[in-house]
Length: 142
Image (tube, rainbow, N blue to C red; front, side, top):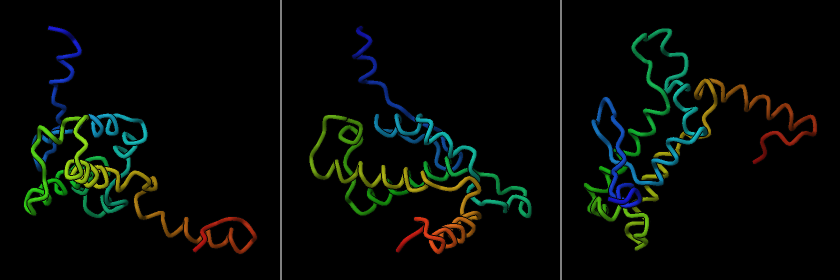
């Protein structure tokens, strides 16, 4: 058997402690294994909450994969999902399949630009941006 044919039939999965095994499209697999996405492993979902609630230790990485899974389940419950064979096929470009893939990718990437301490540091960034803008810098603009 040829190596390329084995790669084409390989299904990429990731295990989530809440949802079990989650199938990944080839694009999702590549994104999840990129350095940009891997940094989410070190960003806490709940910021500094773990100092008050010691069990609150999950990361943006796991959260985002769970959001992707739930977006997929929502599409299934609304009757907008496509079969897994179409979803996993990189050559399938019909509108419904592209819609399904886009929703999953949007959910997967929704936290990709999160600050290092989650939303806890956003207020400081916004204050800095406003101050910089007042001094003539670019800062944050409407």
